[in-house]
Image 1 (cartoon, rainbow, N blue to C red):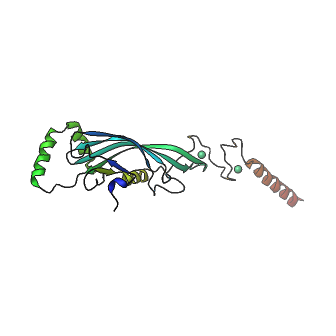
Image 2 (image 1 turned 60 degrees about the horizontal axis):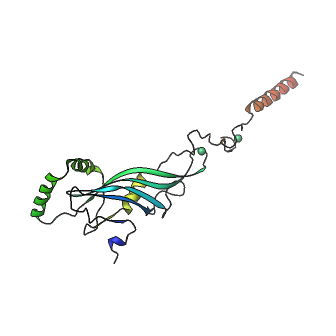
Image 3 (image 1 turned 90 degrees about the vertical axis):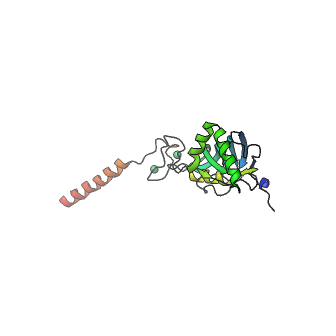
Length: 207
Ligand SMILES: [Zn+2]
Ligand SMILES: [Zn+2]
């Protein structure tokens, strides 16, 4: 049997679980789950993803707000040069508690909600449309594997440049114009060549 805590992405939250108003900081690295992007743009499975944030305990669950930094690999969309850089983004997700079986518990929860910090309640209200993930059955662990995958996949950058002013590739021969800034094809010579050919042809016809 696989226990919740055996997951590499399990964060113990028993200290704050069902204790509204409590906060638990998170600052650790977790392995990148599989399935984040592809060979062109993505995060290599198993590479370190830094998660820096906090769980806020509210009446009906835990809100995790975190800054996530992952090592992104990609290709410049103009010159196809490989890009490897840290990619940071913010995420807010909700881990609801399992529904309580009795009405008495619900009543107690209401009372606790009245006592809860108003700022935390505002955060909770904003999070109703946010992504939701289950806690372990006993409420002691929040597993962040799925949220890491979902958050990173949803936000994968599709238009990355190696540098803001990347010159791209020569449309005629594909040479990298960043490495060969003076590269050009002598288009005017080709035009003159055809003009010269036309001139020679006309002269021939006139003879
Ligand atoms: Zn480029
Ligand atoms: Zn060229």
